[in-house]
Image (cartoon, rainbow, N blue to C red; front, side, top):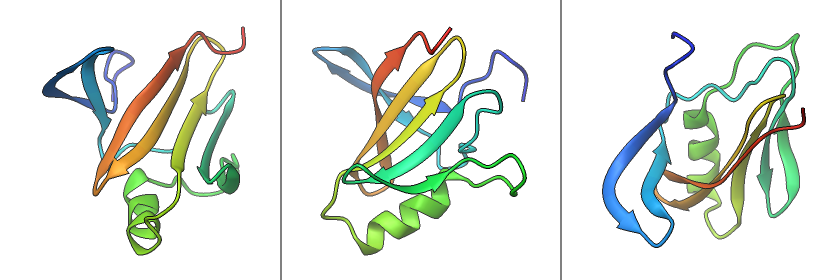
Length: 103
């Protein structure tokens, strides 16, 4: 993947906040320099560890599909960007926050 590619699909649905952006199930839950977490109702289910293998959004979609009545989120925070996705339906992790990161 080159630096210009994003792990999102732009869905042809316009919302009051602009085009609805949904994460691809092949999205890697990792940042490298920064942190990546998956939470359920605010409790950490997964936190990126540089010594582990990469994990993909599809793995957490499977977990969420078994236990769907919770607030599932993915947070990717790097030095120049931050994104938060929220599960809003089967296979639908919607970008709900896009920020400048910690630098």
